[in-house]
Length: 377
Length: 246
Image (cartoon, rainbow over all chains, first blue to last red; front, side, top):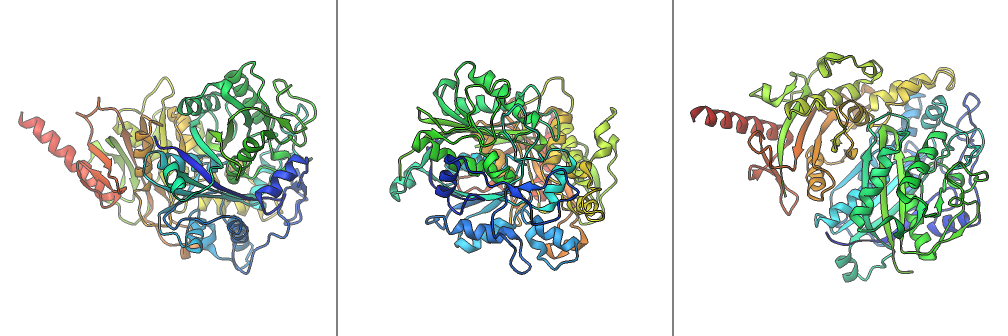
């Protein structure tokens, strides 16, 4: 199996148009959650989300174009022969809303493959492109599949772009499922009451070690292993016994040839819903036992960015490994059972080379990735 | 890397069924048959009534592929992955869902419809109904090729991520409003692809990926997904004839 490096990472989130701004904001304990002004929220169970300031559609195009353009500005040289994998749950669904409301909008933006087509053209890529969709684990699985292609010698370079928007379509859906918290979400807190939606995008350039060395690219981190497992138990709720996530973590550890004690920290999905957080704590406690690993969630700061969550969290995990510190879990105050001593409202120092990042989503999917520390750029 | 095709299932305008029940295959444009609970299961299946049309379509084709591979019954969950290509995904369900949001500014938004506004929802339904615990995701590609999910399945088998993968395509007709986005031939078609050589005698044949990423079946290049099914059926027919001659 060939070694897979991450040679570039970028993010656009409500905490800023760069990964560094996001990282600094998180370390400072900032939250970007505020009132939703984009659509009426009077009839929903919450009125808040983490929205990117000044993000608006241009003419009849979806807001995804604006978001992606801001992201592309942050990305270094992308080799033209890159395989492009995008990850999104709902793509330009804002345009479906406009069309149904009688407003002129480009229907092509609603297609899942649209972002891949747009980015490919914009970056002058000559390789294949595709979108991967697996609910809130979309980008985690996209990264894993990109790494699998490189590891197997099927690709040299894979560019991952992931994105999702805060739209009335998605907001109303989570509201009618009773999943939205009326106050900013509080991952792993005993008094949590649901999730807060967010929007954002991330870009990650994956490269075979040989090619990266040849091109003198930075090694921000190495993707050591991954696992993806379906609970096969419920469409919208996680398995209470955490069977899928536990197995996904074990698969990632096995592929990485690492033991649980080698993991220095966990970047959890941590949505702030009662069931997700309980399930995750159960999985972490079962896999890692008494080994009290720092666990954190960024969703109290930037909300749940759905299909973009895994990509943003991998980009942040590279920062954590590089700086040997994990950001605070914003909103966390009173620990849920099992979170004592591992989740903190303050940044926490870590010591080690490997970090685990996990995501789970509708359809019962769970995904885990293990990253190894790279070099400071 | 080579793997075995051990099952084929489909639903299209000509009907629905398994590879072993048919000697010919076509995927012409046209209206899809009505999919009922009995198309998928003889047993009571409460969740079926809630499902959107896209999920029913994909689930039915998966059910036939599993039946064809003799994997439709189970007592313990199995490590089988599902990778599906789709162009439009659940776009029709998206429209239906948002039409419940518009009238009273969200008061009437349907939680049941919202649960099916992800293209991977039907993979979750298949995982639950058939106890499939492998990875599951959908692929949507700007290229016209419908073979991408098969390529990803073979890479997954090669990398040891899965032992068995259900791989195929699933699309309803695009809603009229989105005709501009292109017309797809509606239907679903899934292959059961296995790494194990234990089933070599009963398999349709070997599917492989060359270094350039080209798919081949029993050693010769695969042009498109319909052609692959036809070649599987021909190979099966030849095998049966060979056995009869002995």
